[in-house]
Length: 120
Image (cartoon, rainbow, N blue to C red; front, side, top):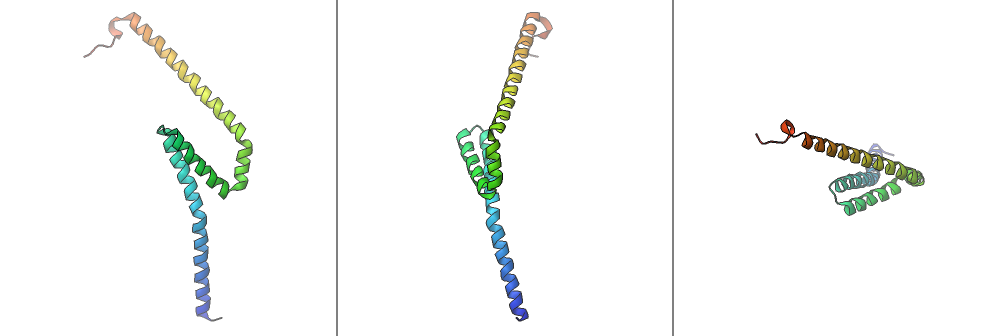
């Protein structure tokens, strides 16, 4: 094999390798883009669009890493239970803060005088 043929073959192999790498990278870009869009949409109040985008991200994750997705799927009830407990804890904290704020506001109103909101 001549030097020119060897270089041509190496260039062709490197292009094929780069092409295969690009073919794999689009899945990662799709997955991270979909999860990022889902987070933005959920935080901005567009729940249906956020859930759809999260579904696209999960589908890309499942096609990229089927073994990890199966592990996640099997542990999903535990994750949902933890998330439910966290949300309930935050909700009770917000309720207690609201209750204390209302009590404090009532005390301020009863005391009157210097504590009232007066325009300056």
